[in-house]
Image (cartoon, rainbow, N blue to C red; front, top):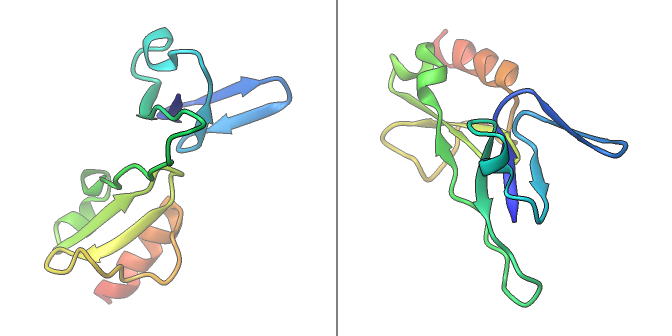
Length: 110
């Protein structure tokens, strides 16, 4: 199963997963740690893996949301900025972090 870390960090051995990272494990992390993980897929070796759909997180970016922009978060936690009338073509060339999105929104509105 695959889970996205929603808050804090999750440590397995010497590997630390941060918010937005995707963890692959057989443990039901979303049941073990309520509201800390989101299940993003159950993959078996013989099944083709599919990328989870991006999630609209515009409410976390009021400057964007209030100006007709949409922020979508990928399973890996990276963000893309879109015009609300064109959700097929991101305004950024490469996926960004939260700080990068905030900077791009300010540049776009300047």
